[in-house]
Length: 322
Image (cartoon, rainbow, N blue to C red; front, side, top):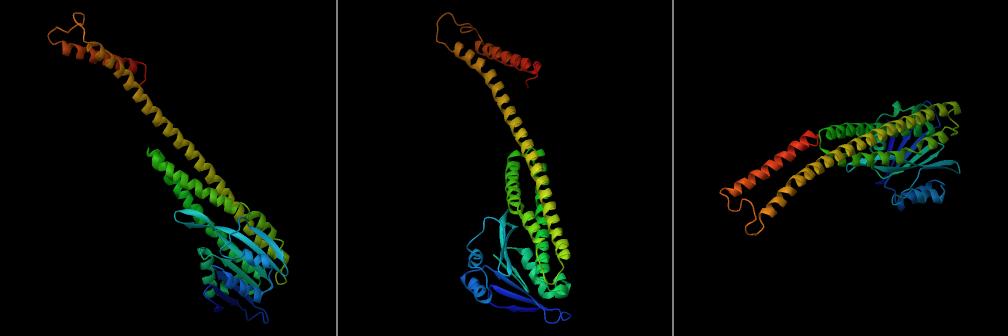
């Protein structure tokens, strides 16, 4: 079992110590919702650059991922998608990677990170980093779990796309508009989160380790680059699919509107002559108005109107306008 320690409410520590590698150990310090107290703890225990510590405050959110080499450590900021309140948002993780330690700071909303940390507490022997006790390898394993968690969100998008397609062809265009807009927002957010991962991960393939050969480092991190490429390809396909569905739904909406306008136009064309005829026969003139003194004159006029209406409908039908 790994040596687990609860340093404070927001700081947890796992010490990975393989008895076969005497004199070496690996520490993972996991900090959630970092504030001034947590940053002060890091400042006292580690010689980190002040600007990197300030960037790790929970109240400040970086707008882009980054990788910077500090003195004897590597500082990383990466974003990963989080599903909350029916939409996808960015969850930020800050990493400090040095010889014999990995430090992660995040806002406790990344379930994949929490799950992997709990797994490490119980299944230390299953870790690749257990045999090598390298922070570079532990970082690789954590990043792989985070990348794999993105696939479940992609699957959710695929299911939602299928549901939107069914809604569109069920002629429920109003509901489809809401579904498409929600999907577009999620896909845009996912693309924004993932678009810079490939470059950052490519840079990590050049990471140096005193414990792991450079060839091994490259092999592991190129797997992450492949995951990043694959996720981006899925996002490109989903983007194309949702745009096609959007265009289809717009076409159906336009067809419905055109059909409604056609019906209203036909109704107006039929009613206007009838209104005109009724207005003419309603004139209060003496001696010149036909059917004014005729028995059943009212019904004769109604018959004329009905005949005219039926005649116009027959004409529209012949022209294929109905």
